Amino acid sequence: MKRGKKYVEAAKAVDRATLYETNEAIALVKKTAVAKFDETIEAHIRTGVDGRHADQQIRGAVVLPHGTGKTVRVLVFAKGDKVEEALKAGADYAGGEELIPKIQNENWFEFDVVVATPDMMGVVGRLGRVLGPKGLMPNPKAGTVTMDVTKAVNDIKAGKIEYRLDKTNIIHVPIGKASFTEEQLADNFQAIMSAIVKARPSSVKGVYLKSITLTSTMGPGIRVNNVKYNSI
Image: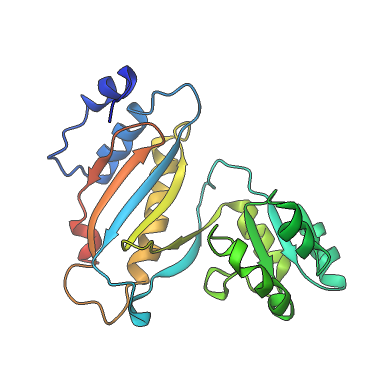
């Protein structure tokens, strides 16, 4: 794969054989984010679990202390007073069954997160085939199936992110933007790592977190020393 000049230059600052301490890795990931736009900084965490087993699933949500740096559009499926409550809380869209054909037939996806009250999940379930593959299906573990729509919307707008295993047992999560300070990125990273460490399934044997890599949208991967996260 051919890399651009900026990437090649940035990559020279990174020793691929080194496991950097967290603060060093964060300083490096900021330094190597040289694109003309405000790059997203992400953590990629390779786990030692086997997500094919129900008792080894990792899924949850955490509110980042400094947010994600991204404006998140929220759609709430609700009935009656809950629709008004969701809109007052700051939801971008709220409604019920009338939204189904708009999504199914008009390919409307002007939202980043979907919240639903439990009594609407029968309706939302009909959208499983379109919301599921996009990672938009509401889920109780992520706090997106709830009667407390105000808290759900407030948390999401404040920087709540969901973490889950992909098919290769890796967790991919944003920790902020390249414009964030090193302290802000470190705070967000620690919040995510604490949540993932706490979410360790009891059935997992051996090393839980095999590797942690930080990267910006266009930059090289920087490997983080994961020893302390496995010894917590």
